[in-house]
Image 1 (cartoon, rainbow, N blue to C red):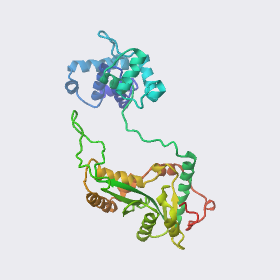
Image 2: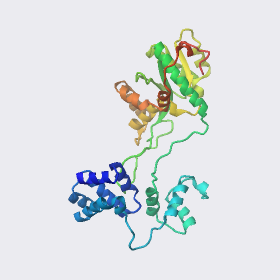
Image 3: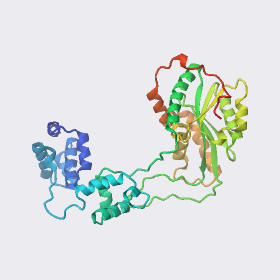
Image 4: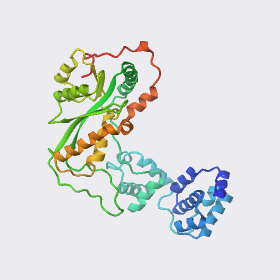
Amino acid sequence: MAEVAAALTHWELDLRQVRDRMYRAPTPRERERWHALWLLAQGWSANKVADILERDAHTSGGWLAAFERGGPAALAFAQTGGPPPALDPAAQAGLKVAVQATPAEVGIDLANWNWKVVRQFIEARCGVRLCRSACTRYLHRLGFVHKRPKKRRLKADEEKRAAFVQDYVALLAEAQAAGARIFFADEAHFRADADLQGQWVLRGRPALVDSTCPRWGEQASYYSAVCLETGATEYMELTGTSSSATSAAFLAQLRANHPAPLIVIWDNGPAHGGAAVRDDLSTPGLGLRVLRLPAYSPDFNPDEAIWAWAREEVTANTCLGSKAAVQEQMQRFFAGLPTRVAEVQSRCRRKLQALAEALAAPVPESNHEALHVDPIGASV
């Protein structure tokens, strides 16, 4: 191991770079050689490396000796026979550029890149027809990985989002000075049918989830709210659809279970305003302030993480079959949250909190009014 470490130091490489070359080398032979070097650097014996790679111990020892003498260039593989690579370096570079755009942008009238689209692109540009494994192998070799995308909401107003982050930083300081609690709130629905999510299965076997296909009406709906500073949570089962009246009822429950003053932040859903909420906020001495998130900004709402957490633990790949079964499991989930405060705070930290911390700085008292109940100014 000391011998390998000395060689790496001489050629100005570290383990991370060796591992990267192990995955990114252009040919399988080179990747094998870097793999052997990486294992040797981890302290594996030459015999054990030979067993893992199904090579002779003298072979892996020869690779190490070549590396000591000539560095990374000594592990390069020179094609001495057989057919040349299907794609030359220029074609590979063109493919890498193309896949970073949409298929439509490179003249293919399809929505998304997959191996068939890659084959179509290569065939049109290079006159070579590749099989599925060759297409995916080139994608991996060029540094691509397959990920499930997240939506980048084009309707979100970045100026308003940035302004909200600044307001939130000031709000945190005001709330701390006044002893107020800030709750982020939202509502969600949970069907009795399975919420399909990725699962681990043995290679070659299908990923299947049993379902009794319950009716759409077999679902349970809830309001919930979370306070990041204390890890406190609140929930209320929703009967029927959400409305101004149900939102006012949830605000009343929140006030009853948590001492004033309270600040509630939620999105611009129509149920979060209306006559019932306005009437509630006009009550003198209520000790409640309601604010709205910027439009199209669910990534700012920590309460969204509560719903993702519930789906992960309650409905993921599980068909509960009936509304009653969903209610029973959700009741158990919510009942356990008070014992998982640290996890609540960790899971519910969102982009808003990261941005606010980056902007956080001492705020002069003269710049802000003392926290007060302002039902007229509440954004409802």
